[in-house]
Amino acid sequence: MNPLVIVFLVLLVLSGIGLIIFILMHSGKGTGISDMIANSMYSTQTGTSIIEKNLDRITIGCAIVFLLSLVVLMIIYPHGTITQ
Image 1 (tube, helix red, strand yellow):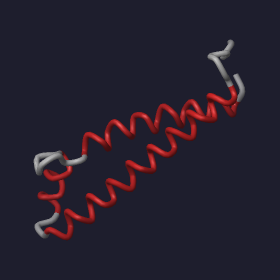
Image 2: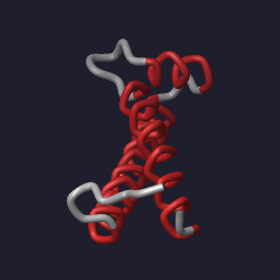
Image 3: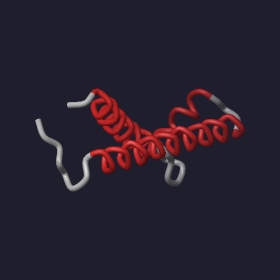
Image 4: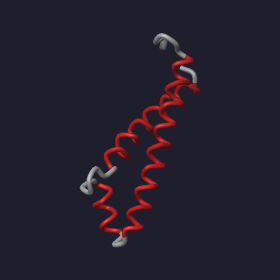
């Protein structure tokens, strides 16, 4: 396999795992993992707001990397033509 393909496959897998982790960390109605972390680290509401904004940014970044690597792999190998 081409080294460029390996790089994009690694990016795809890592960003996919990152998406799963960061989406699960988002709070639903005050009972998410991020709220537990935020409540233990900060006692003010502004700290929670900053953590949620940063979590949103990281999640969006992972989604962009995931989509871009997926599109590049689709262009390089159309119709599932990956061969050994």
